[in-house]
Length: 467
Image (cartoon, rainbow, N blue to C red; front, side, top):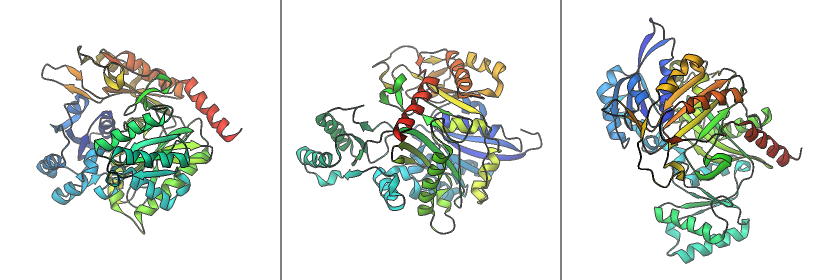
């Protein structure tokens, strides 16, 4: 930050390491003196250390967040929301209407992850080639389990047993069951289906997509969409993609905008499909309701081409942590451009990045229960920065700074390390060295960005494409 930088006040709505990466990007501004005001789920130690003001709102209630913005609005130029829950609840609508502080996130109308069924219909309307075969099962249509089972059986008779079963409403990436991974009989499949019904959500059954996954993100000013480099997320808890789905155990990006198992043409196809979604929602001219990252899209690259698994309307976690550390634009300036409708180009350094998460012992069913010490010490990991400088970033997530001055792991993903290098392998080694330096009862996947994993993805895509 330059001493002469213009003072800018920014409110950040925080949950997890994603927000720490956003705050870090603001604090690295060379053109602005960024003063960050944080509405946080807990006393995240990184956020506390970097915040002008910090407030804890455990339930991220939009009314309480709005009160915090109102109390500080004279010092604020804009805000950014990282987690999906406040976006879905209409945070931007409320804050802008009440305080006049512009927010970088879509309005409630464009919180697209609120309904997977609505997503499927949107895709069907504008780019049906990216949709799997699917059916929506509404709870209100069935009076008892036997009736629902008959309907499910009938649909499986049409498309086969190889399906994914998903709740219509958001489930933080953890509600999906897939044939061959989570169930292998129709009875097991229906047990999963019925558990979603009992939780209060309608259910989608979709044909299982076979291929390789990528995560696509783009900044938006309401008029234009500017794509960010592709990343690869690791959803499953354990090495070799075993175990339950999680919020994401890590991710990687390559030097180029596309992944090693994809081509430049694959990347262009992703951009074409997302642009069609954007055009359908934007309509003629511009649509400020789409400001922020309205499309964080999970693609599956199959034998038949690119298919869309799901769409979210916020930055990916962990995927945005791959991008922000290598952003060459001033992030404060980018945010102003999104607000003012002048977004044009986003430049990232030609570096590879690898994100690895360290998580609590009882996360992802690693241990059924854990009653031991949850204290976590990051001091040795931070000391590595003397060797690696900005090529290693440490972003606390579900971690709390307490009155005794120590930090403790909470229930979700505790902390991520981001390694940056000329190759994925180099970036991975730095990320893992940071993980190894963390003192605490935590565990992690070891194969995020591993060469054998990437080579397997390359082989699978060649097999799917017959070359």
